[in-house]
Length: 80
Image (cartoon, rainbow, N blue to C red; front, top):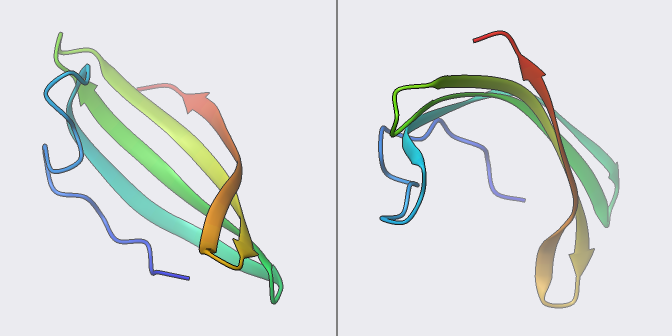
C-alpha cells in the first residue's frame, strides 16, 4: 500500500477541477487484513472561487489481483 503524502498546491487539481489548492494531512492507517486497509486523513482545500473547505476523510481499500482498489470513500465536513 503506498504511503499517503501531503499534496503540493495545485499538483492534484486538473484544469477542469474547482479546486485551486489542496493539502492532505495523514491521520492514520489500519491494515485490517492482508487484503483490506483503511486510511484516514484531513483535507484542507481552497476552491477556485476562494471558498475554503476542510474535511476528515476515510478511504477503504481492497487488495485485488490487479492491486489495491478503492472500496469506499467518506468525508465529514469541518468548519473551514
